[in-house]
Amino acid sequence: MANPPDKSSGKFRSAQWFGLPGKDGFIHRSSIKNQGWPADLFDGRPVIGIANSWSDLNPCNAHLRDVAESVKRGVWELGGFPLEFPTMSLGEPIMRPTTMLFRNLMAMDVEESIRANPLDGIVLLSGCDKTTPAQLMGAASVDLPTIMLTGGPMLNGKFKGGDIGSGTDVWRFSEEVRAGRMTAGEFLDAEAGMSRSAGHCSTMGTASTMASMAEALGMCLPGSAAVPAPDANRARFAHLTGRRIVQMVREDLRMSRILTRQAFENAIRVNACIGGSTNAVVHLLALAGRMGVALELKDFDRLGQELPLLANVQPSGKYLMEEFYYAGGLPALMREMGALLHLGAVTVTGKPVRDNIADARCYNREVIYPFDRPLKPQAGIAVLRGNLCPDGAVIKPSAATPKLMKHRGRAVAFESIEDFKARIDDPALDIDETCVMVLKGAGPRGYPGFPEVGNLPLPPRVLAKGITDMVRISDARMSGTAYGTVVLHVSPEAAAGGTLALVKTGDMIELDVEARRLHLDVPDAELNQRRAAWKPAPSGYARGYAKLYIDHVNQAHRGADLDFLVGKSGDVVTRDSH
Ligand code: FES
Image (cartoon, rainbow, N blue to C red; front, side, top):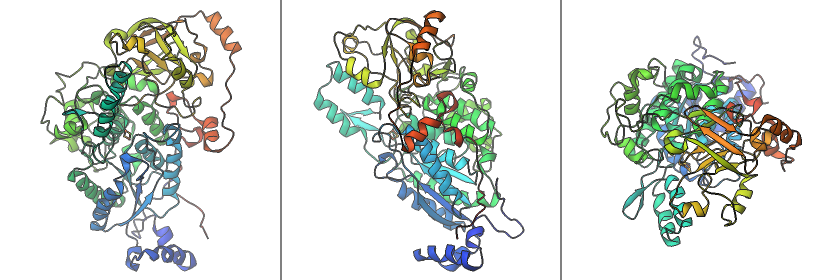
């Protein structure tokens, strides 16, 4: 349900609070006037909610209160009334057991905060990985005019005179330490040089990917996703975002007009060409579910499989987001993609994609490759099927080792990430580089929360040979900054009784990415026996949000939203508060 602006009276939704006569209007206006607002601000002008995921506990979003001030300038300038409010914030490097457990909770917070308050338009301020999809999902279920501004990547990390990228180089350095090729002191120096400014991860990890997805979906001003957090252009985009949301309210340009099937198809294709995170799969599926767009896992393969990698950005490439921005950013890359995109899709500018990217230019062909001379010929996320993943699994070929993408190997199975950590460094573990590491119990329900542990560290004896990749399979996710021949999001997960739960060390597993096949080479009769003997482990959560999550989370191939949050309820609140 949506309340259109009352064109005849010129009243917006907020007038149902601030425009009321009598006791209720008095209460709504009087209380908020304690902040010094003059009476004429309650004259029916658009009230703009700035949903801010700022938090000292989320370093990637810690600068967003400054960004909000710039947004407010733009709102005031066009005659709106900006009111900033906090949302939950999810700091990827800090929260336990995993931020993904809380993405849906944050989305609930955003949704209910918007609906319950006298707001006509929304500016979403996000940054770190889950904050972007959570805000989009929550806002989508209300469906007011909404625009997003992400916080931007941090400046390039520096170590020993060279650039280092968030996450990606952490994985590399930690393996170097385990292999004895890097000292603990050097590791500490790298730690001090990696995060040099405000902003989210500097690689094309999940935060940069989701910022790019938001822009590709049409939810951000074009060109804003890649602007580094400390760059004055981010404040400029914030100011313009503030201006634009006031216009969007007057135009009644709601999320449902922007987040169409075409928008999602554009995002999936852009994700392929930027070498974006596998996490985009679950987030886009969940967001589409909120909007009632029938997106499926197979769409990612169908739309992305033939697309090349154009962005030479870590982890699939060499450079960082700072260079991507200087090279022209997402508009330049989208212009390369041309007619592969739905150029008529409407965006927050009120204009189609075609107009937004018409003047985009690439200024560095080392960073953004031309479509007819790409960095890698195939970059889309591959969706695998087989008896090990009847509802699908994903792999990112651009971050994998080509010779491992067709592989048959002996499984070494781990029942949990704790089991893995306890045994992987044991010299007695019977494992070599031809084996397939299998991790169970790290799916949405099983962990709970679907953590980023799928890029399992390699055993020391393999690392000592200078080998840096092995086939790894799990029901987990992996950081968008990570790389390797890593099969993720196996569905159904082990905790839901998927075939993954039945894998035993010594079983043979076949991976064939080109054929999109993942097969556990165990006879059906044997699998049926194992299935009959399998029992789910107790979750260990008897109360609270984790219990709610475990009882209601959808599997990975459906975006891991809570089943009762799929869809939207609109912006109508039928009952008064007093
Ligand atoms: Fe926040 Fe990477 S840790 S974006």
